[in-house]
Length: 91
Image 1 (tube, rainbow, N blue to C red):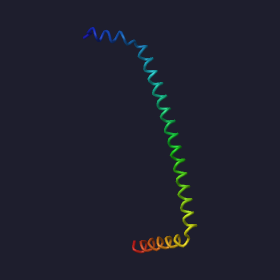
Image 2: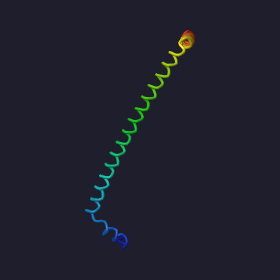
Image 3: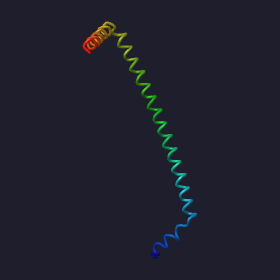
Image 4: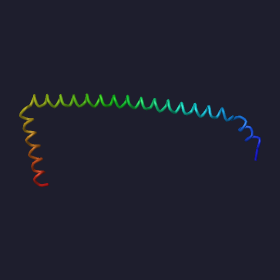
């Protein structure tokens, strides 16, 4: 079944040309994978920095709240401790 269309396709795609195209495709895929990896690493690094900054800000806010209102902080800590103690006794 050698139709004119299949003969034209076979003639248009030489084996050497096909192997060059496959190699070019492999190189493109390797470059794409490398770029994606670099972008992901950069994004993860930025997210880690943001999480670190947020946790430092939260710690500073909590410390300032305790320093500004020490009796309230002691009362809250005592209440939370009492609740945990009651839950531990029942559990």
